[in-house]
Amino acid sequence: MPADRPFLTDPTPDGTRGNGAVPPALFDLAVNRAAAALRGLRPAQPDAALAAWHARTRFARRVPLDAVKAALAARPAGECHWAGGEGGGWQPGRAPFP
Image 1 (tube, rainbow, N blue to C red):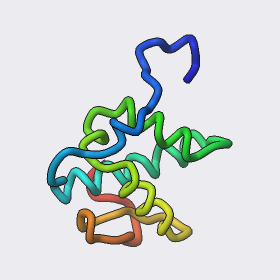
Image 2 (cartoon, rainbow, N blue to C red; image 1 turned 30 degrees about the horizontal axis):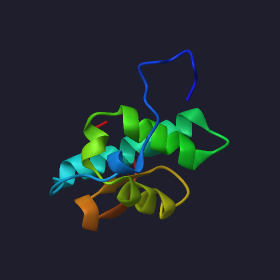
Image 3 (cartoon, rainbow, N blue to C red; image 1 turned 180 degrees about the vertical axis):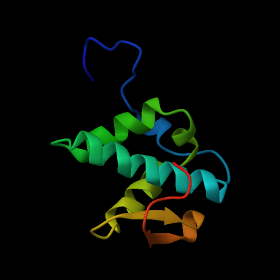
Image 4 (cartoon, one colour; image 1 turned 90 degrees about the vertical axis):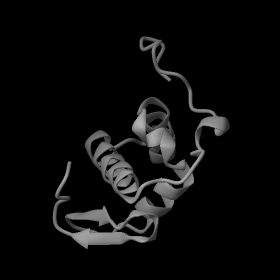
């Protein structure tokens, strides 16, 4: 983590797993926001950037990081969004909710 941003904490394995059922809308939001963050940042190390994003994004911490990574790994080319919760998939077009 950058030294000039002390309010951000390094991601730890303990903070990468949610502790309960994840509502479908929250899962969709986490995957779509993670995809947008990676698209905007274009990091050299996407896994590290995704872990840092997950650690500092309050709502995303309720969604297991491994589930977000799995959804992002299945992302097709072009403009699309995740819908349907954990059992959902990528849909063409923009997400109806940012």
